[in-house]
Length: 435
Image 1 (tube, rainbow, N blue to C red):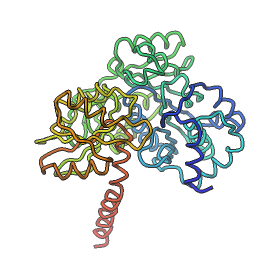
Image 2: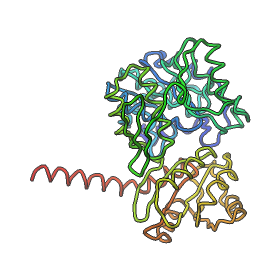
Image 3: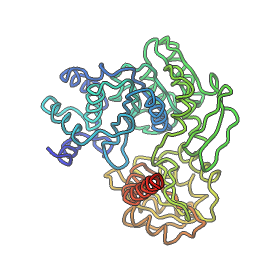
Image 4: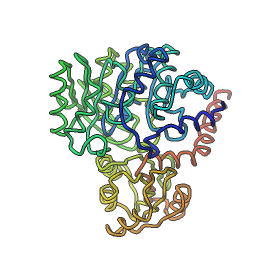
């Protein structure tokens, strides 16, 4: 099969991300992994990262650090442009050839009980085991207890801030959601928690005590000092040691502190942690893709992330008008997000997403009208970006948010421009050396 056929085959299975009904249960993937010689058990020193917000960024920061010490596998979801982004070694996505080869090997043993996510996770297990990675970081897909990544035996379990999301699956209280996230904690294991709401932290402490796991809490066992944030990133100190973070927004400092703590427990020295944090890159999160006017992409899709994004935009950027490109999934808190974003918006272009789970733009328009924000529906995200650029002045800011699916669509449309720019600057540098 070719790569396109491989993707079509994987998506023919039950795919929760695309709206398929699916009962979360580890029995199917456990049974399947036994058939393919339990590759997950061969992965060295895995770290699991769960939580509602910040888990992707934290996994990325950890991988940037660990990648300086040897071969480091990274598994994240969802992808922005290409499914291969989910499976990387030292920031290099799995090749189409390796992806197809592994899929063809495990395909005869699959049956029809697995989900799309379980298949992709299994490919990551096989790939990392086969490449004999020295370490691996896995971002939990949903929840923790019943997520496919939880078949691993993590050396460290990381729990990022917990808030309301996927309440139809994880429960409608912070306590119930926290219990699902705590499913990644192991007996006598090591656990690092970002700052949490009191209800969630109480559950984390309770589970750690019951399982006799050692717990480190950011804000209690590790503190940030001398914090400065601007459009270039953040500078801060921990225990009188200085760090420079390339990611934008003070919320990323929490993610960095959590990664620092986990890395120290993992045994990584300061100089490597410092370098890893300084060079981390995470597309689609406060991602500045153009200036004059600013064009910023961010995948905030729940109310907690929306508040963080709103604060960050106001703190970091100097702009006259804010033009919003907005699209989201129908199972998210539509009213909540729009009420948070509404007060800082001057105009909104609403777009449907290329997903069966896309929210109805007409429904979103009604909410924007209700909160008193001028908005218009356009046919797709590419059109929305074009219209926004036509409307924006050089001192304005265009912000696209509401879903990582939206960010992925826009990055794909910008990808050629970004690649050409990157190659252009690389060629300039090479020519300068020759001179």
